[in-house]
Image (cartoon, rainbow, N blue to C red; front, top):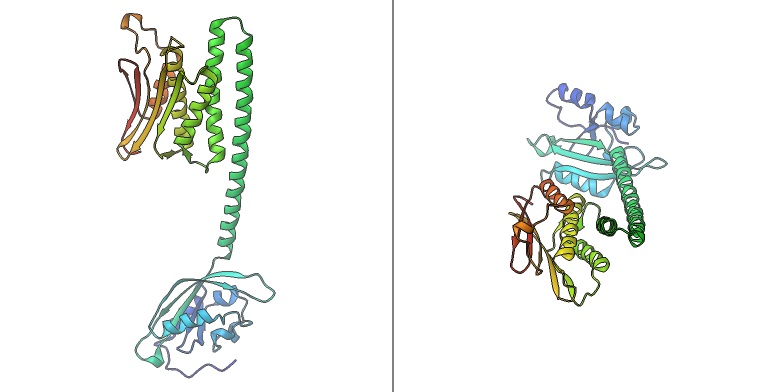
Length: 342
């Protein structure tokens, strides 16, 4: 270790005092990268003797862990006025001790002459922050795994419930009870389909095309006896949305498709088609379910709105959307429209 170089004195001792008392680990370096002053916090943070730090070359501090070639090149460029180090990340590898993760900032202080240039080097130890971030990332990954496992379990449980409902529907004698059990089965299956999509996709991100296709396939499999006569078409853009919105949209589609299959095609031999469409734009989105069946009954024959209508209305209100039912002669079109930012 060489003695302190002979340099022009600092403007006053106040600068040295400020460096020494700095709460942030701080070094004052000369043009040759020798330490003119070091804060107590720097010496304490890195286990250095203050008496051995002042006058030493930066690369000689400790066991030479500060001798990183890239750091030295950046500091030389900074002292020459050609660069400034802002948030330079460095691993301080110390013999027999844990590696520290540091963020360094270095700025030229004096440029009156090449021999008088000095540089302040501030060091921030972010080791604990890095550890916390890694622990948080690991916890997030574990949470995602547990969430997917939960979604699989919920989907399996819903499938079991749906099977029990179908078995009950086959055993009951009352047509009305059988109808209610079938309705409950279809609603449970819509949620089970969503759970499968959640488990297969990224957390919080549900692709509506795959979800609504699977949902309609599930409904068709349990309610359509001849797929060559009655079919369900699904036309959906590439929209992905949150799980909450997907649940509401799926339940709306379930109610409307079930309603169309139950009432739009009273003649099982006559061909019929149900089309489910969804699109979204910056101005809003629209979900429509259209059939080419017998259309809406005359007002004097219309029945009192049932549970399905109430569910559609409630879910649409929840999505801040309006419901418009149109007699397309033949057939019926139900549009769920949300205007505004998607």
